[in-house]
Image (cartoon, rainbow, N blue to C red):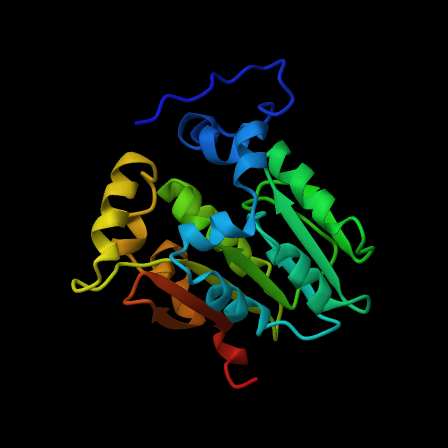
Length: 238
């Protein structure tokens, strides 16, 4: 596994960051120099094998102007700008992240949208007096340990109001004929130790009360990616 930058208490970019982030993802999300290098649309396109726009559209198509949207973690590229633009000034957009470098980038991107807020918070514990029409995890679950997946999924579902929706966009188990499967197998072994859990379990597996919800999943690109929408059972027809 890649050797990572030591967690330095006096370094503000590392303060309050979970150990699994500094130990596994310093190179990708914590070290501000690396974040500056990676936060570009071209990087996102390469990492997602050209499926970036398709996956972003799956999220953006769920948003109507005036909606209240919470995205549980920052992502690279211009997605968060597009979400803020889609909600518009009659809605609101809350972006949370636990990592200072990600917060800085999110604030820079969303500074011109007064209805967008960037808050440093753990996706598993964020509290807000607003209720959100849509709560989205865009490629977060594969980056966290399984016990963290459970608390994040449960928290997102608990924050979903009547008539609301939760959306998960993430990796999935590729079909056996998909050659990308073997590239991802190597990446998971070397760089993404928490990702392969999504090959072996449905996202609903990480919910404590999955039977209280309607789970709708579709996969794209030979099963490499999944798009899962969740509603409460009593709201399924809305």
